[in-house]
Structure formats: C-alpha cells, structure tokens
Image (cartoon, rainbow, N blue to C red):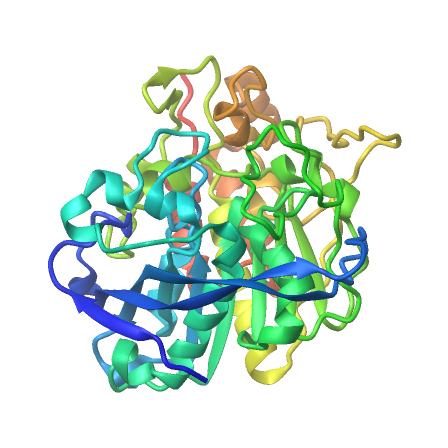
Length: 467
C-alpha cells in the first residue's frame, strides 16, 4: 500500500457548509490536497441489471484532488464514525447535499464528516445542469494545482481517500482515530456510489456501510462519460444493489426519485429488503426542497424556534425565477434523513437492523403514478406527522416544464375551510394530533427522539393563520 501525498491548506474553503460559525458548535473545518495515482476499471463480461458485476483494473493516471474535513474540536466528542460524502456536481459546482441535510445530527452526535471532490466536473468543469463554477474556474490561484484525470478514476480515488482516512488518520484527523467509515452521496453521487457498490466495493473493501440518498433507476458508467452526455449509456436502464452486497446499504428515496421524469424512476430498481439492504421511501418528500435550499445553510441548531419557523416559510422563488407554486416546504425529508444517518450508524456499529418501511403505493402499469389520498398526499411509505396530520399538500412532483424546478416538488397550504374541517378546534387540536403522530414516527424509527421538541415547536409555529 502506497500512502497518498497530503497537503494542508490555510484560508477560506470553497464549499457550502453553511453561513453559521462551526466554532460556535465546537467544530472546525480543514482542507487538504490529496495526490496519488488512480486506477480505472473495465467490465469483465456483461453488466446486468442485477448489479452482480465483475471488473478488472485498466489504466492508471496521476491525480490531485481535495477533501474537506469537519471534525469536533474536542477529541472526546468523536463517536468513532467518519461520514465520507461523494460530493455532488450536478449544478456545475460542488454541493455537499448530505452535509446540508444532516449536519445537525453530525454535530449533535460527534461524527467526523469528510467531503470528497471525487468527480472531474467539480474540479476541472464539464457537462452539468448548471454553469461552470468548478474549483479551478472560480479560484485558480487556490485550486490551480488540482488535477483530475476523469470520472473513470473517481471510483479508485474515492477508495484511496477512504484508505487514507484510516491509514493516515493523523494527517487529516489529528488525534482522532476512526473506527468505521460510512460512504454517503445524494442524487448523481448516489448513482456513482451504486456503481461503486456493485463493481468496486468487493475489490476495495474500504467502507463499512453505504447510505444512498435520492437515486433514480440508472447508475453511473465505469468510463468517464458524463451522465448528461447524449451518448447512450452502456449501463442498464435500471440497476438494483447486488444480492451479495458485502456491507450494509440503506437507500433513502423521495417521491420525485421513485416516479422519475427526466430520468427513469427508482420504481424500476425496487428490490426486497434483506439483512444487508433497507429501502426507505418518504411520503410527501421531494428530491430537494425548501429546507435543503434555503434553511439548511443557516440552521446551526442554535436558532430560536421563531427564527427557524420564519426561515421555513414557503417560497416560490427558485434561483431567481418565480414559480407558479411553492416548492416543497415540509421538512420531513431533512428529519427522516437524520434518522437514516443514525440508523446506518447503529447498523454498522452494532449490527442493529434499521426498521423495514412500507413502500409508497403506486398505480399499476409501466409508468406508475403515486396513489394519493383525499388530501392529495401520497399513500403508504414512511409516515410522518406532516402527511398523517397535514395542513398542506406536499409532493415530490415539481414543475415538469423546468428541469431544475421538477426536482423541488410542490407544496400548497389547505384553505381555511379545509383546515376548519380537519381541525375544528384550531391550532390546539392540530398540535395535539400532530404530537401523537410524531411519537408514532419516533417509535417506528423514522424520526429521532432528539428532534422531538424542535419538531413539535416548529409545527405549532408554522400552523397557517387564516382569517
């Protein structure tokens, strides 16, 4: 085993970790350049939809990438688990979506978080659904030394980063010694991690568990072809996790992911839960939403409930465009994902299996739709108080005419007459019923007891006021 060259950087880090002060939370962030030689892989035989793939080493190329390490300042707070995120580059720049979704849980429970610049687009630029805001484009002085040979090498780069966190922990974690590594990734990153699990993990064996967040049915290729290329992908249209997966895999799916649109929906890649696989499908949730876009960056955990409720007010604005409907504004995606982090952690640490979740109900046929109740809320799936005791219809279905908006779902408060019908005694009745539903969700394992007080206070503060 050859150690990687690791160089610490000083100065401002170009990564959206939030506008809050990490030091006030007892955490610190450090950035490193990591250099070495990576290997690409080619398939041996066909790549079937069953995910049982065999690959062999192909070419080699030098690389220099960067990682960002967020860790507790007090070593005694470290819980032994490192969350390693394959950072998303769909927008043309790096967004640590899983940090944004679950940083409250990371900080609360003493995790170390590592963001990995695994793909070429985030460093060098290239095809994306956004503009070219790659690291070398926006800050060539700081990031000019980075060099990425292409996404065919991303898999081995990600393996080597995991290996270095263990073998060279002093260089990146200081006095903290990791006991386990859990790989996470959202959307495009989940595509790549699915390919990693099916093709690379049996060789690399670097991660103790995986959390796949909001994937569709397809997966990323082994070569450097972009998933946005017009060239037909050599990969199956829908791929499951291989039946003989080595370590625990938890997959978290929203309504948007399940139904699909721009990409084939996850429904085509559904498979049964096993002792190594759990799939959670969240009712009322969108691929990305108002919390992840607007609230997460200020949600330090230190905000009072009035400020948090104000931040959660529905928005129709999306990247400078005013939409006809609100984007999905219910926060269940965020809170369920935090429960997913806790669940995969317990699974990897102690073998405690996550709860089995009901799947969202779908209509029959090759192009299924969600089955909706009388309130327009998706039936079955993971139940939270926002869908069992609703004041709004929140959905994963977005504006299909706009590629970006289609990922953000929609939300609409019920009118005064419907609220009166549902809750004749007003806010007090709503909060009482919401609390009972909240406790059911916590008991089921899909929300965290640590979030209970905040969730209940937020529900009361966000109850719509009608004339």
